[in-house]
Length: 112
Length: 112
Image (cartoon, rainbow over all chains, first blue to last red):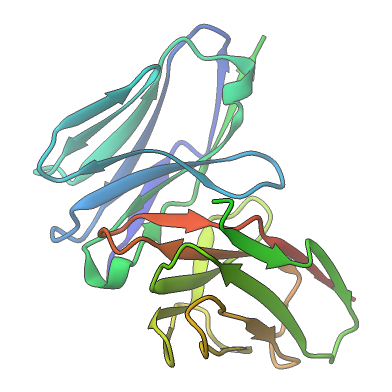
């Protein structure tokens, strides 16, 4: 089955700096890669996703890049703000029954 | 996400008791999922259902049971056979567009 690894597990940045979170996946058939943000005690919220026919997708301060050859994808957050502090999860899906395999999460802390 | 409800938000039970967690959705989504999240950990799949009257075990199904008698409802029972049931339980639904899942607000179960 699919295996998704996520790094780093914790990331601390200064407000205004950029943050990058990286994930690798094992199943070459995976073709959908969402990112979720989870604030303390809340539900994970889908913030951006990318499909395998696209190399990069951007939405304001967040962007995701995908390298199918290397089987890795990354989340980039620019101009970080304190409200970006949360746990971020990557996931991968190969379309089989809408199943998602999640990475272990990254706790992002943005220091004012 | 507002169309997925989980109740109760907090649940306390004594060891040895079965407990049922509710998940209801009005999004008309066919697929529903149950995940378990432990502190500082990622999401692990317990059970999922692609269609009414059908469900499949996920990665950590032991000690849990589900039913899917209606499209709108996918209750999860945590049985006394689950050795370490204290966790945050998240229900999710899928749109049918490959991979996209949306989460309910979660139920935090504490067993003492």
